[in-house]
Length: 403
Image 1 (tube, rainbow, N blue to C red):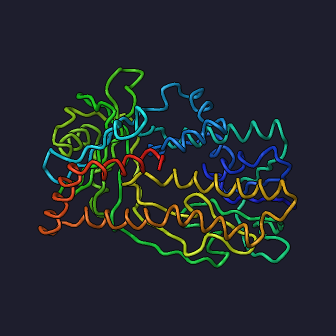
Image 2 (cartoon, rainbow, N blue to C red):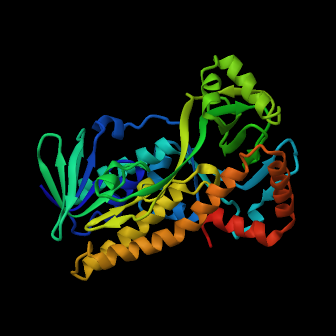
Image 3 (cartoon, one colour):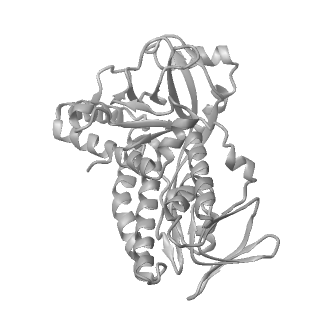
């Protein structure tokens, strides 16, 4: 089977890339090892995604925003302000929306709804343009490329060919590895527990990043629960990996009390409102994201630590950059998988992502270090940052994606 573009991975990045390229005269294939039902009906996975305004605009242009609102009218929650706290000190650094030209810093939406919206949009593209082929429940074997095409062998022995092969199959991408591209990985030695909770006191649509001593807490403000009207948030608890399972496996009443205690009762009583999910924290930055007739997007191009909330936004940025380059060159009748095109995409994407990846890695290391001197530095940095308006304005610009 021959394609112009073959995408490995039917997660959000892969599906959104296919949507962005559809209707332009290209034959697109999406290869995914999961069964189709798992992609068509994505389960809640605990993760809330913070969207910059640029990402929100991209979702609107591709029709995903509208699709998600059809699925869940209250899906998008305003992220009005952000607060950074250190240790027990209740006075932190507040990044207010007034530092940006918008009435909010961004938006929050559940990851499984993004997946659902992306799937639905791809189905729309298939119905209208008939230019996307889904190959689900398929594991890959050997992967290689030559001057004419990229080649993917399936478990059943079939060989797929494409003018361009795109990896969109996670930060630990087996496709990237099969193409011989190395990546630098940093294991933070911690895991995060994510779930949705109802709580007594309002969050006022302010996101928290609380670097407490011995733990890191995040609160992502969601819209009030439509069934009960109670205040609702996604919470993220980060602990050393050996300490996370005892909390994750608590019975619900004990878990509720434990999370309220860890939040120092600042939200009042808290009640679990979803399943609980645990993820290891590993940062990944490939040394190269392109090769001969090959490119990476999404987490395969950069796997971020979540504290700066840029993982999905960088994924969309890569999709936007790569699809734009492909369509411009294709419209001119030239080879969109040429080394010059792919190298230009790599330069743009790594220039946009590498500085913040390194800053995020450094912040995560500093703010999880429990040495007394580090605690003093952490608290001083937060308090000084609160007093420097240009610094806070720069953070606001980063959060909104409007730099």
